[in-house]
Amino acid sequence: MLARPYQREDAKACDRLTRNQGITTPGVDEIFVVGERGEPGGVLVYRPGAYVHELECGTDRLRRLRADALANYAVAHARANALRSAVFLIRAGNLAMMRWAESLGAVKQTDPGDELYLLTPP
Image 1: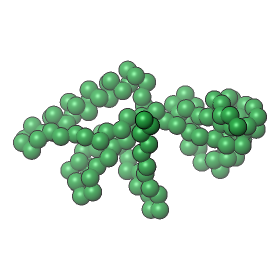
Image 2 (image 1 turned 90 degrees about the horizontal axis):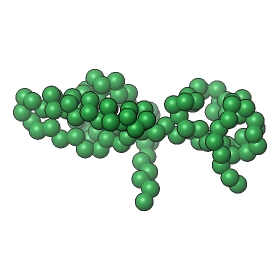
Image 3 (image 1 turned 135 degrees about the vertical axis):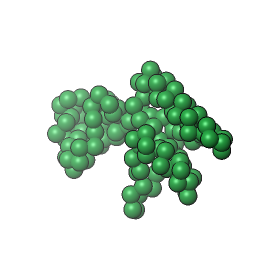
Image 4 (image 1 turned 60 degrees about the vertical axis):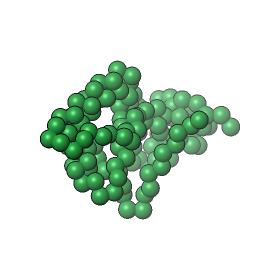
């Protein structure tokens, strides 16, 4: 079985597969399907993004300025490379970092019963 890029004719079947949750955004998400044109039997929605796993800015009064400068630079770099999303991994209990990420507009994705996994292909 071969996967292929989503085509406009696949929209109704993809809505059915995702239970009309509105979780796909053509033009933002990469959408792949398997099955005949107009009737795919499977869909995978992939949003290109960046994985932010290290951000160290010291403990002095300039730490927030450093964090903002680094984040702004990273956002500009990501946009120049057509990335539209970022995943932040923040240690449990690091409330200051959680508040900072939320101040940027990041939205917590930990829903009860859900787990976030990261795949880093070799």
